[in-house]
Length: 354
Image 1 (cartoon, rainbow, N blue to C red):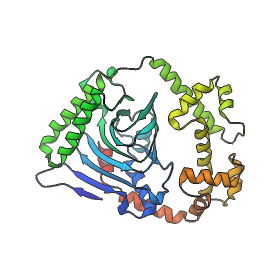
Image 2 (image 1 turned 180 degrees about the vertical axis):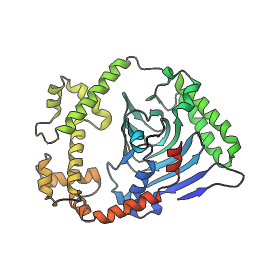
Image 3 (image 1 turned 90 degrees about the horizontal axis):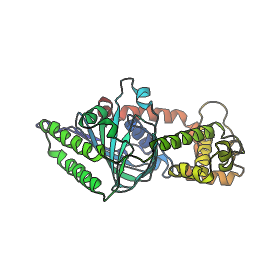
Image 4 (image 1 turned 135 degrees about the vertical axis):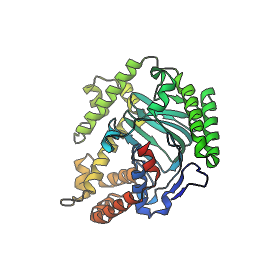
C-alpha cells in the first residue's frame, strides 16, 4: 500500500494491493476498506487465503475515482447501510465501467446484468445485492447533491445500464478513460474543472436515459422478490421449502419465480446457498460446544455428509473441517481483524469524508 501526493499540489493518490498483507488477512483488509460503500462477501473460490485485490484511487475532493480488481465476490448494501456506519454518512451514486468481468443482481427495484464495457449507475441509497466474478472496474463515487443540480431529478434513473457499444456508453467510456489517464499529472487547482466535466458528462449520459415502460410493475416484482427472500430466510429449516412450495405460498408461477431469482443464480441455488451460510455460521461460532459436522449438515437439510462437504467447498473454498478449525483459531482471527482495521488504506477515509 502506498500513498502518493507529489509536489505542486498534485491530486492525492493511493495504490493498495492486498498481496502485501499476510494471506489470511487480505480479505479482512479489503472488506474493511470498502465498507463505506458496501459489504463484501466471498462466495466462491478462492478461499480467503487466496484472495486477491488491488485499488488505485484519486481523491478529487468532491468525487472519488478509482480502478479496482478483485477475486469473485458478492456485494451487499442495506438501504440504511450509511446510517448504520455513520449517522452523518453521505448519500452517493456509483458509476461503474467494467473493464473485465461484470455482475448480476439488484439495486432497489432494478434487476441488473453488466458485462465488459457496460456502464451502470447505482443508487447507494437503495438496497443492493450483486455477484461478480473476478473483475476489473473503473468506479466513480458521486455525492447525489453534486449531480442533481445539473438535471431534473425525476429523469435520473439509478439502475440504468448503458450497454457496451451504444453511443452513450461509447462517449461516457471515452471520457472516463481519458480523465483517468490524465489524473497523474493533474494539480489540485485543476480539480474543480475536471469534476465539472465529469458531472456534466454523467448528467448528459444518465439524465436522459429512457425509463422503464412500467415502473409500477417493476416495483411489484421487487416487492415480491423481497417477500420471497424474507420467507426463505425464516424457513430454511423447513424440509418442505422448495420452488413448488414457494409458488403455492405466493400464488406465483414457476416461470415468474425463476425469472425473479435468475440474477441471484436461480431459486434452488439461492435456497442452497442460504442453508450453506447457516452451516458456515454454526461451524465457525466461537462460543458454545463445537457441533459435529454431520449434525449441522442434517439440521439444514443436507442428508449426505460427502455431498454436503462438496457443496460447502464449492461455496466457500474450504472444507467443513477447515471451517470447524476456524472456531479453534478464533482468537488469532480476531487479532488479525484488529490489525486489519488498523491497516486499512487511506482511501477508506476519503470515501467516508466524501
